[in-house]
Length: 312
Image (cartoon, rainbow, N blue to C red; front, side, top):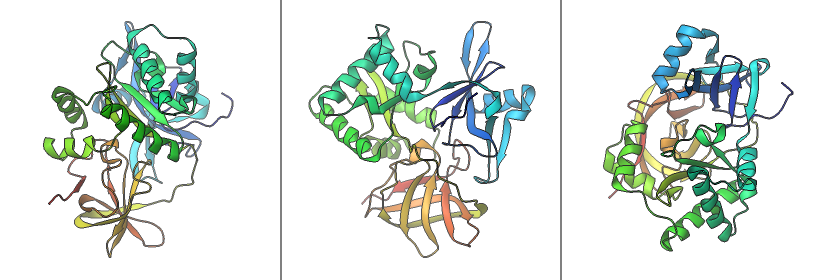
């Protein structure tokens, strides 16, 4: 495979019939950091849950299990030489919009893009991930839209709010929220989860179909190696939310010991804004200089780890 930039939220496929979702832009030790999402079976592509994916690789392809010393975390990784197909999310959306889709899910995606265009959004700068990216969507599939420029991402959030106010998009139904909450399996109560999510302005219904918008940093930044050194629960004020929707999401904190909190799970992206007081429960990590931060999302489900705004 020719060298190319592989971005977070793209997918890659191997010769064994495995499709992985990329979790970080760039490479580590010649490998793409990712997580197994689909396996090819006699009846087509089968989607795997987290534990299923780990068990499947442990049994059949343990060489794809990977410990990242930079992230100090267990995940999956595929060497560049073993990738037989790269699914770029931005290219896929452009192709779909050129093809004038008639299939239900991609037709709804087209409607969503038209609505965003009407709000001044350049949809050629967006991408689509998830099942639509690899062409295995079902009639019940959600739409996972991506944005690659920080200012455009904020413009999209404002556009979604405007379209909701105009009735051209709809808020999620109670059942949608419950399904989303169950998938996240997070440490927040259902009420807290919905309160935080509803105000983020990055998800709604288009023609009754759920979609959400994520921000992907197209830059490949050399990561700092952190070591985990305990667990902490703190309350403090957020000083800066500029990078709240990044991967990992980052909040600058007004705390004597922990300068920042980062999260690798989408549940806590955009979780708080500047000036709010939050309670954080997570792993303590230390960089080579001795500076410490908090990490929420040391595992995919982030069991027992959370960020929540303390509401009056």
